[in-house]
Length: 165
View 1 (cartoon, rainbow, N blue to C red):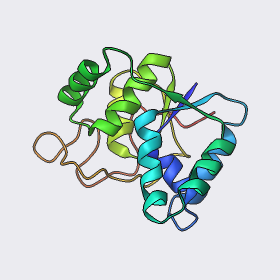
View 2: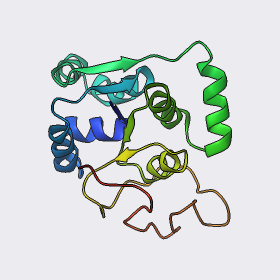
View 3: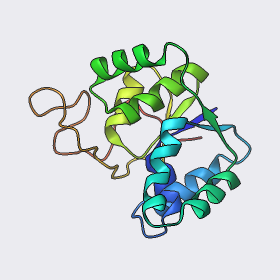
């Protein structure tokens, strides 16, 4: 099972996005595999199209990908709070990690911080061919200028994360 982050879906839906080709290729590589996203991830993906007046088009495009929606479990709020406290990820990224933990799925993202945090938690991470210049999330890295396993300068490769097979 593949748990999708908003970064992949947003890039796929926007042909002007710098990562559009990589995201679209990645999704093509997953043909026949079960794709899921947290309900919050789907909402995050739909914000831009809603602002632009293209919500129906975006929903139709997502429907064509046959993405299942992973809802929060009953103890979801507490688990998300713990994930946020432990990883310093933003809550939307915590939803991706929680969905992968719930489903024993692989995280698919273009976000370096999310990829690193997921790998540190023992989750499989699938991404375009490494090395790729991933997006840095806007949250300040942990510690004195260093993220766990990623240089503050933004190394192009993230240790411990395998490319798709």
